[in-house]
Length: 232
Image (cartoon, rainbow, N blue to C red):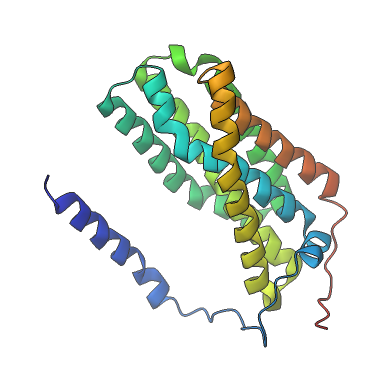
């Protein structure tokens, strides 16, 4: 097996750090002492709190089990690779337009819209994905991934908006903890459902999680207020 693919990938990963090294924007202020207060984070940014958890439950299953789904609907190795590539490219290309959109309008509205659209995309894959020609299946995954993945970053930006720049490090840590917790549980639940109801249940699970993101955005979105963080 040729090592060049891994060498090129490693080089591209290293090159991706160059914009960070050249960025002149100062880093967020470091807290005097590290502290992760999930209760305060929930009270200050409930949309981000629930959004990060539910997105982790969905995206963790989506990313890890897509190849399994491809094998279950009898795609060959090249077709599964194309499917995963469609997901990756769709996720990458969608970051900039949705990021700019969230800078121009209320982020909670963007989170709601993306969540509803991502849920719809997942439900369509659950119902029709197994019967689609490969090219249409790739397109479906490209679009759905492009709706799912930016939602996490908009949620993160919303968390920083609500918590304030001085608490951005703590907010980022809370978001990451909630997302990763969900991403560990999601594949277990989705794989169990797929074993019972068939391959499409994976996307029924993912779509349901995005419905919960949308619901939590509506329920908590207009109750959150900026809060001062009192360090005890």
